[in-house]
Length: 274
Image (cartoon, rainbow, N blue to C red):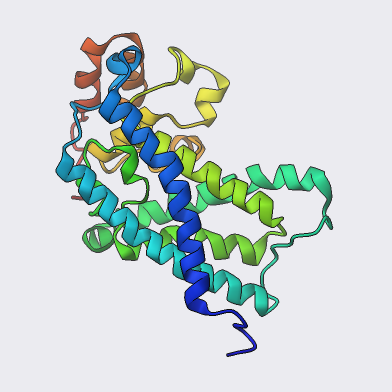
């Protein structure tokens, strides 16, 4: 064991936790303050939920995010162990060159989006929903603080993408860090509570590929739809986009009077896992 861990596992876990905490503090917390405390007038009409987010909800989201950061710290120990055992494919030299350094980032996003879609659908299975995913869905009108607000069991699943990538893809460590940071930024955008993309975005090629804040916010309110993270491809291919996703997006970007009705619309026969 001493050969495997020349550094203390506790120090590794704390270091990983601090790094993730800094990312959360520099991305999720300022987004919460800017949009849910100050709320610029130019985006008020783009609010997706009734708002404002209560202090009780904010405290709950922050508390579970801190628990998740502890889990992520333990995963940092696993990542270090994989590296020491020669199993990790992460590297720190220039063996694969700058082109792969850049390309590996979108590749990791695609891998993670696939991983997320299927694990997310699994956690919406009624037999596991209450034990794994219900905590995250306590926020029907989520804020950026909910980006890491997971039950510990869900946090383990969410963190699982790190060893999956380390074991399967030759990725530079700096590219991996960029990927993790982008992941949090997009996650915060999904829980922002305000739609920032422009009118007509969904009718563009980019709108076919990428998700919007409306997409994930709608998932928090109508739980059996909209399972994707970064991309809308899996949801489109498998028919799991909410039937009113496009109209909800149009409503919130074209006028606030239509938004609430569109977000609340549920077709006959739809149901909730919660």
